[in-house]
Length: 209
Ligand SMILES: [Zn+2]
Image (cartoon, rainbow, N blue to C red; front, side, top):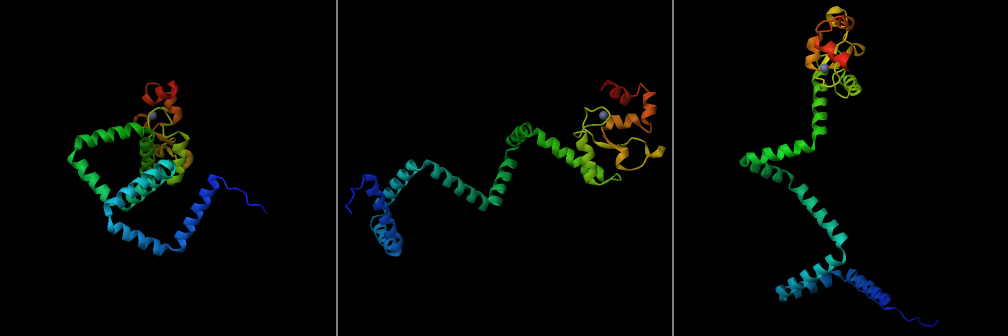
């Protein structure tokens, strides 16, 4: 079989493969030799190493970015508590900066804060009424956390539609989320009575919906 002439690319690839194989077969020897050279002229070695690093980075920008991110992530994970402590100490020394940062965070996370407040209310309220936190959560979800009477204010209470004092039960089908204002305006009235009390705030709000 006639020998085919290799292209430059192919020759380079073959050379690289051989060098690689040699390295892995003689790793200890190669490393020892490198160490001797390095010890002989550390300055020269450092320079060469920096340059070859720069060449590699220029050739593989994606891999470089990836690996530096990984290293940073691993470092951050290792020094998590230390960093948190430093940040807290710095924030304590710079209250204005800290307030400003909190303000920016709040303006960027409005929905999250609302969600948090909403979940917290559900948690608090579920301790005071006859349904589970899950059931109360569904009830709040049905109204997106808003008052069932005015539909605009955030619900902060759970209201018994048929008041307990009027024989209403402390069960899911008798409960609605309500805001403070509507709840206190409703008092111990039934829904039918509210229709006869048009001057009550809660009645006006319901009719204006
Ligand atoms: Zn309301």
